[in-house]
Image (cartoon, rainbow over all chains, first blue to last red; front, side, top):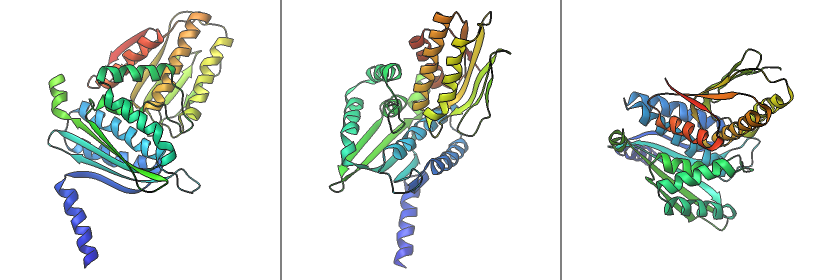
Length: 188
Length: 127
């Protein structure tokens, strides 16, 4: 009975918060493809402007790829990591939330990326993106070092981070990104 | 020169690079599992242009990318830098036709950035 209540509470919470697509578990290239497929279908059904749906999709890909690229790798024959992902419908647009574990030895780079995104305005972020495009190189993790910049620019800087240690070896990274429909309409 | 052809998947574009028939295009979505492996043969094909007789006249390279991830953007940028070198140093007349959905300002903006940074001539086509 208790178990049923727990599930019901989770169901109600997600419903209340208008969660559209949620995923908790192993992140692989294949599971990301499936999440994107469902998310894209669900966004389409909401009858939103095409430019909004495209923006949400673009941010979704970067956010999900970031989990796979930077999450603590599990000991497995394919690249996989644990994480959580939620796509919400909000009154003004969409909110994407992701969470994943990251090794403490890898957090310095993430911290400096977060600092950069927090301190720069949109124009400075665009300039940093251009600089990376021109001079950057692909890291051994397969990233171009511009995923976070790209998301921040697309979300018009409406994003927040949270990074805290969970134990001596790992930290948890939370990312929240809002894509605002209204602002976009005004800007059009 | 041997053409390079690749069928599309749900996460990689259809690619045709056929110099003899002057048919060169990238069409679809681009977020390959391993970007470096995916782009290596494409870069190699463009590199090979430096070693073959240069065809006369303009050659359009059509980019119709519905979506590309940020690590693909870095590789696409490198292709444009390469095209810029090939035009300058090997007398090719390669131009980019950047096709974009008229509702998609992000893909359009990306094209403007690529043109600005590479110095290659872009023709923008809203679809």
